[in-house]
Structures are given as structure tokens and as C-alpha cells.
Image 1 (spheres, rainbow, N blue to C red):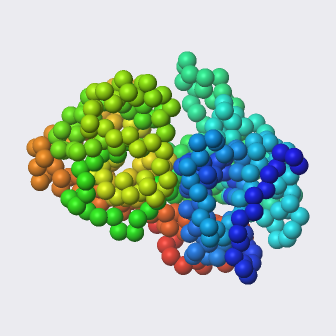
Image 2: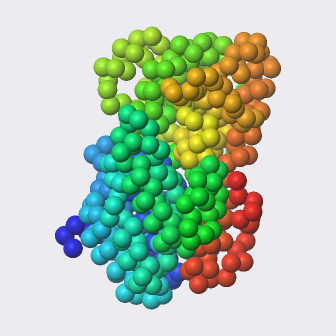
Image 3: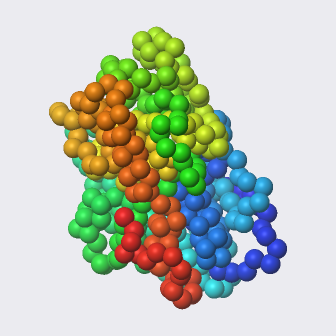
Length: 403
């Protein structure tokens, strides 16, 4: 079909089935946390179990793409061009035409497949695929939005929930990275599909041995989409400044594309002065080098949803302490655990003291221990291997060890 554009990527000689189809809303060259999760899962499955992936990418790349596909790439990538059900059906039919029966790993994010979070076409395409012999496993990066008034989700929440229910029902099994999501999904799990809990992957690399904090530049990173960084600055800039002074920070690193230069100059660059360094959009290696040389990373996010944040995962993967600020709707600071800090936690300790940096290091070490991509991929492999017709006696950790 005209709406389907196939991009062939080098396939290593002699590679034989099985292969796994992965459907994502966005993928490289876009910088996208869900896409990077899919790629990192694919790389672990390929390395540990010999399972390569065929990526189906729903949305065409954005204009400001920054990521590259490595030269030696054992997977394939097909861009569907946002063609809704027609483009997806055409691609899946080609896989269905060649035995063995294909397995599709869907990375579900409702807003990734629809600007309003209501991809009404998706459940029908998935049900068509399974009715023709395909097997579906879904990783839910999102479930559905709650009906908050006057937000637009007040009018779309019921549709999102209906789409979620049909997608879960069509799935042979499902995974999610958030404990609350497991409980919510359980209430909508009419067909009693197994739902596993895994950790999400870093969107900015995973160094093997990140150095201790005392050997790093005294830098705080502010990373993520511009909207999330802007919200943090708008709500917490004063406290961020106090924290930087308390820690003796040399640099606040703003990492990511800036969509409103005038707002940043007036509301962030002017009050922070030379303390702020704006890096703009970065490649994965560039971002990884900065994280590996930062003592902390910040974000404003709900503490109970951190399991689905690829930004938090990036901080964890680089063993940087995570400083969590409350969101706008919260009336008091969030309760934080051992590997997550609040500004209040740190400001209560003596400025620039050994006790302060010991607390940072403890949180950073626990955050790094809490993170493990291979563990998540191996957890998923216990379900993917039998679906692909392989024995489920894979090496490594078991599903029960996933966080």
C-alpha cells in the first residue's frame, strides 16, 4: 500500500527464525522513551536468546530527529506512516503469510497512537491479527487517563478505558512497569490474562560501571520533554536554586529540545544566570556522558508512577541520585523512598557536608541497583519464548525476580 514505507536494515548473514514483531508509536531517529525501551528489550533478546525483532513504527519521524540506528543492526524497521488500521493490517498480513505464526509485542501508549489518546482503530486490527493465527503480547506503558474535569480526559476517559479493555482481552499476556497499573488492569481483566511487572528502560544509555558521585562534576541534570522541564522550572525554580547552592553545584544542565526560547530566556536563563547550561537535543552517547558525570537528576512527577518514567530510568541507569519535586496538583511533598530524594530531604542536612553527600550516594547506589534492563527483558522472555515456539528454560533471572 502507498501508506506503507519499508526501510530495510542490514540483517546478519545466517540469521534464522524465530523473529519477534514489535509495534511502537515512534522509533529512531526520533528520541522517544517507549521506542528506546523497545530497542533495548530487542537487543537483550537478540544477545541472550537469538531472537531478532521486526519493528513496525506507526508515526513518521519528526523533523528534529537526533538518534541514529547503529550500522550493525540485526533487526528490521518498517515505517507505517500513520496509516491507522490499513497500514498496520497490510504489514501484519505479510508476516501472517509466512510460517510460523508470528508473535507481536505491542508497546501500548494511547497518546502515541492517537493525539486524543483514543486509537479506536487499534483493537480491531489486533483482534483481526489474532483471529488469523497471530499471537499478541502487550507491554502497557499507559493504561487510560482518569476523567478529570475540566481536562479533556473527562470526555475521553471512557473511550480510552474501552480501548484498553479490548487490547488486554486480545493479548495472550501483558506486562507493565507500574505496580498501580497492575492493580488497575486486574479490575478490567475480564479474561484473566496474566499481567507481569517489569522495569522500564533508560532512554539515554546504560554505562556498565558508573563512577561514584564524589568523582563527578557537581552538576544537576534536568532532562525530558520540554513540557515536563518547563513545568518543573515554573513550579520549583526557586527551590532548585536553593538546592544547587546547598550542594555547591557548578552547573544545572538543561537537556532536551527547547520549544519556546523566549520563555526559557526570561523565566529560566535570566534567574539562573551562568549556573544554567542549555545542551539542547542530544544523541544517546552525548546524554549518557553528561548523566555519568552528574551527581543528581531532577523531575516533577508522581512518585507512584516513576516505574513508567524513562527519564527516571536514565538517572537510575547512570547511578545519579534522583530528586523528585511534587506536581502542581499536590498540596504537600511526595513521600519518597530510599532511592528517591526530595529537596526537603537534602536541604535538612548540613550544606556541602559529608552527611549530605553520603545521603546522595546512598540514593544513587540504590537507584542503580533498582534498575536492570536485562532483568526486565528476561522476565518478558519467559512469556515470549513459548509464544515463539521455544522452550521457556532461558538462562538468567526468572520472572519472579523482576521488580
